[in-house]
Amino acid sequence: MFNRLFSGIKSFVMSSTIKPDVVFVLGAPGAGKGTQCENIVKQFGFVHLSAGDLLREERNKEGSEYGELIEETIRNGRIVPVEITCSLIEMAMKKSGSNKFLIDGFPRNKDNLDGWNRQMASNVNLLFVLFFDCPQEVCVNRCLQRGAGGSGRSDDNPESLKKRFHTYMNDTMPIIRYYEEKNLVKHVDAGGTPDEIFEAVKAIYQNMPPCN
Ligand code: UDP
Ligand code: MG
Image (cartoon, rainbow, N blue to C red; front, side, top):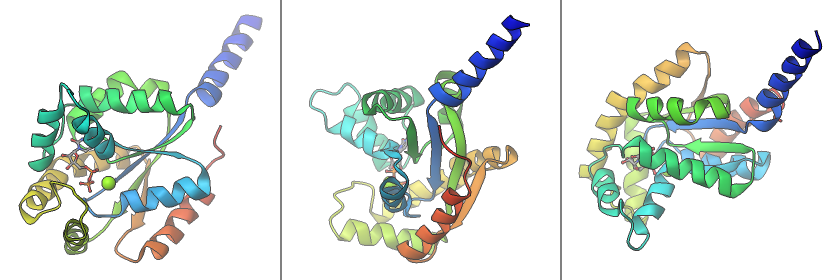
C-alpha cells in the first residue's frame, strides 16, 4: 500500500515537477517562428531555443568539427543529422537552467523525430506543437525581404529557398501530421501581421494547462 502510494507520488513528481516543459514550434521557412517566439518569451517566460540558430552558432565556432557539414547542409536546405542538433539542444537546455522551453524549427524530419524520441522525449513534458501555417508566397517574400535586408543568412536566397520548401513539404509536414494524430498540434493562421498572429498565439497560451 505504502509502496504503491510512494511510487505513485514519485511518478507524479517525476512527471510534473522535474521534467521540463517543451513546446515545439514548427512552420515553413519565413512563417514567423522566430518573431513569435520572441513575443512568447517576453510574455510567458519561456526560453527560446532555435535549432537553426544553435546550428549557425556551432558552425561559426572556430575549429568546430561540424562547421562545414552544417554550412553545406543549410545552404542546400537539407537537415543536419539529429545527433548534432539534438546534442546542441540538450546542452542549451542544461545551460539555461530553465524548465520551460520553446524549441523552434525542430523536429523537422523523421531522423530528427526518431533521434529526439530516443534521446530526449522521455525526459521532457511535451505540452504541444505550435504550428504556424502560412501561404508559401507570403513565406518566400518574407525570407527574400529578410535576405535583402541583410539577414546574413546563406539560405535566404531564391535557390536555397526552393530547396528549403521542398524539404518542408516532403519531410516536415509528415512530422506535423504525426503530432496531429496525437492531438498535440495547435494551429495558428500565420499569414497576417506579427500583432495579429500574436493575438492567436496568446489565446493558445492562455488556454494552456498550468506549467510546472
Ligand atoms: N536546420 C536543421 N535542423 C534543425 C533546424 C534547422 O538542419 O533542426 C537547418 C536546415 O537546413 C534549415 C536551416 O537550418 O533549413 C535554417 O533553419 P531555421 O529554423 O533557422 O530557418 P527556417 O528555414 O525555419 O526559416
Ligand atoms: Mg527561425
